[in-house]
Length: 239
Image 1 (tube, rainbow, N blue to C red):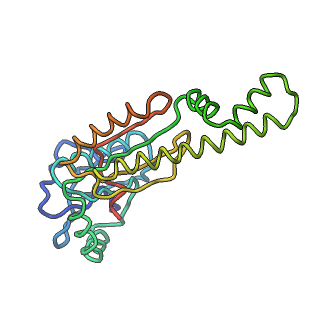
Image 2 (image 1 turned 180 degrees about the vertical axis):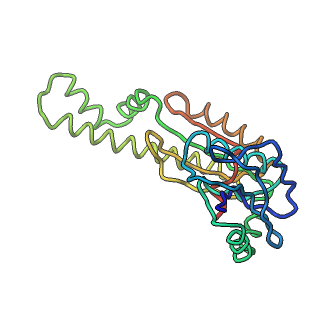
């Protein structure tokens, strides 16, 4: 029977799986497939699993329950295997890599850091104050100069300045936060974000990270939205 695979753990993990449901419209009990020093947490499925809210929530709840009791390698949503034998084969073939990853992630959680420009007005005013060329172009436009190239030139100049300043801020925030992590990954920002950072944070550094977050939020001031989420299963650092 096909299996849905949630996580890989060491065989000594407590695996407290009672009372927690798996994915699917009619969830089956979670169980462990063991091979040597490793286990895979799975449930039997009889349907195609799609990323519906119900199943995404079930997947995440399993990860969080397992993570509360020990180190895990959380798999991304949607990982399927044809049967127990296929799972054992994967565990055996990749045992050294999985054991190394479990050792590296021991005692750590993932934190996400995202930063966006919540209000552009303070930044735009700062650019006009700091950049004489931008200020001159703006004054000419406001003074009634009808040269059609002025607005284009001002827009291009401001866009370059915004990008440069956001990149500088993103680099500074990354430099300030990385010392609290064992590892980090920068992801391509999306939407209005100009920083999308994942940190692998040891438990003993979590309080210091939160203090740093609060201090940085005060330092960067109005107009910038600094968002933290965590502790989370370390999806970004499994590979």
